[in-house]
Length: 264
Image (cartoon, rainbow, N blue to C red):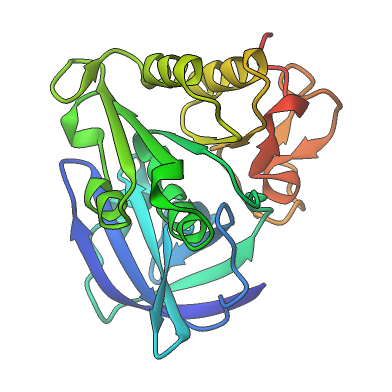
């Protein structure tokens, strides 16, 4: 883990609420998919505390990691301020933090992302692609409307199969992304499911994984303050986990879905 200032390389608007941030910094050679960073912009007055962001992908050049990319949605004071920063300005980064995804040796893999839950999935897909044939990896993207379906080109460039769904039917299947997942689990044997998105979606994915006896890992999105297990602000209570006093920042953000009890 390092704490370092990072230069902004780009801060591109992807849609009404989404931005793609490139940061130049060193020390992330050992980062793995599913880990995150906490960020604070210089001269930022509010909010006082850092904010967590998944590592979207690594920036590599000359066989070295030269920085990281972040995908974010403007949802509060911090992200709205972050969206105004220009190349050459600096932010302060702490990371990589948390536990990432455990990767399979082989087999058919399903990745499921809802909205901004796609943020850690490109890094995961790139890593899986180094081990697996593209035909073995399917990406399920869901959103409220077509503008919420991010990173399609990145997945297609990897040669992966895309399944799309929107609540309003503007792109792909009209309905929940878990409808598509259920259909494919019925038709095809999967060896692993990886998911990130809203808690109701994760609950549905975990239930489908359980009913089809497929190992499943989920990345939980939540508000954090310190990101290191000190403030205890991201505790999961016993309505979500099978034992008390686990925290998203240090015990997650990736969890084995079998250890969670979404039923309640």
